[in-house]
Every structure is written in structure tokens, then in C-alpha cells.
Image (cartoon, rainbow, N blue to C red; front, side, top):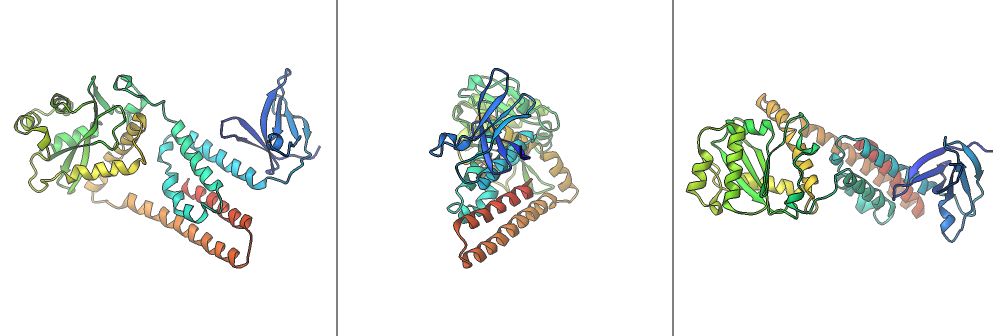
Length: 373
């Protein structure tokens, strides 16, 4: 028997797939009584009716192999399947898989290769599907919100969710509580509907102005079931208690002003809700549509986990560390894309066919994936 190079992949439905010599794909067919598994060529169920197959025992040793095919080699499709499978494995292994943003990065070249190489979009869709699969099942009502969940714990291993009743669930990390208490005189509040889960009314946020840094920090998130004034009172009472605030800012504020007029508390330099509105826009930009409950909580938790480090660095006068790192990676990606655009122009000028151009951009995609990871 010829020496075979065997790679393990996976179909879009999650079933095991065998790739031989990076040229031919075999899907799982059935298991025999002796526990050996039969895999048939993927062209078996097409018009080609390819009869090639391979049989493994339970130790993945080859028992029988018929390598005669009645169709061309599938080197491109085999490489595509392996790439998708490797990306899927990396997503599953990652402790923070939702930080991978394939749409933002890959869309930089989708206009160039979307029509030339449709498989490109297939890979992008596959990544997004597998990221979403890492989330718990969606919930459809306030009653289904769990009392305890691993997403209620921050990366610093501290509680993120501090209160829940039938009308509201409130999130505030210990560091957010520290900021709220220290800067409670400069308090801004606002609500957004765009990122509120379908079963809720609004996501309500508080932001505090840190005068030493001349910037705002978000100090709590609440998901509301309704817009009753009692619900908002509950939010402030809980936050005051959690932050161990003795003075009565929240209560006085609620009595003096109707909720329709809430805007700011004690900072005359910021008399609009732009401070809160800017964060609402930031949240809206993270999601292409309304997020599920768990996707929203994951995103908020991940964002809040960065606060202690950024606050400490900025208080020490270090501002550009993260921004510089992002800019460097972005420039690398742009340079890669530009180099492949030049190669594409060369192929077109030499009248190369579509498969050469598709292969070029497929190589670019793999190169980009390596840079992203």
C-alpha cells in the first residue's frame, strides 16, 4: 500500500472528515460490527459516484483502502477544509474566543476576493458560527436569567453581578464600585435600547467623570424589564449600598428630578448626556444586531476587566500602550493585503486564469490568519 498522509478535519455539521495526501476528502459513512469505521469519498453522493473508500479500526489504523477516483484531485477544497478546521479548533481552545473579530479584519480584503473566491466568505461565516457556539443557549424571558453563571465572574475572579429581582439585574465589578464611590459627585446616567436583549426594555448605565484623567469610566450596567421609576430607584439604592456610600446623592437626585430629565448630577462642565451617549454608541458598534443576553454579558465583562489596568497606567501618565499595539498589527495586515494586490495585478497582466487568482488570495487568507493569531 502506498504511504498515505492522513489529516483529520470536520464537516460543517461537526462530523469527522478524513483528508488523504491533502488531495481527497472522505466523510464518515458508518461503523461496522467489529467497530471499524468506513469513510467514503465526498464525491460518492454526487454525479461522479466515486467509489473510493478507506476503513480504519478503533485505533485509527488503516484496514483497507481503495484509492481509485473517477474525478480530479481536490487539493484546493482539501486545503480549505483544513484551514476552517484549524481555525475552529483555535476558537474552541481559546479562553476568550469572542475577542476574535474576523469580520472587521477579513472585510478589509473581501471586496477584492469576494467575487473571485466565494470560499473566502465560507471561512468567515464558519468562524462566526463557531464563536457563537461557545455561548450558552439563548434565553427568551427575564425569568430565565440565571442567578449564578460563570460569566458573572470577572477575569480578576471577582463578582460582576451584584443584584437581581423580577424587574432588573445589576452588574458592577469591585473596581467599578471603587470608581463610583470616589467620583460619585460627577455622575452621568443614560439608557440604550439598541443593545438590550429582546426580552428586556433597556440597558441602563452610569458613568463617572475622573477629573484627574479628564475622561469617563462606566461604573455600572443594568438590564431593565420596564421603565418604572421604582426600578430606577432600586438601581441607585443597590449601587449606593454596594459602594458603601453614606451621603444621599442618589435619593436627592431622584426626588428633585423626574426620570425624563435625568442627565447629569454635579458637573456643570458636562451638562449634556454626551458622556453616556458615546459609550452607548460604542456598545452599538460592537454588535451587528441585538445581542443575546449571554453575548452582551460576556462583552461587558470583558470590557470591565480592562479598567483596573488602564486606570492605573493612565494615572501614572502612560496612555498609548494599547493603542500603539493595535496600530502596529493593523499596519502589518494592510501591508500584507497591499503586497497581495500587487501580485494579483501581475497575474492579471500575464493573463493568468481565475484559479491562479483564487489560489493567491487563499494564500493571503492563511497568511492573515497567522498574523491575527
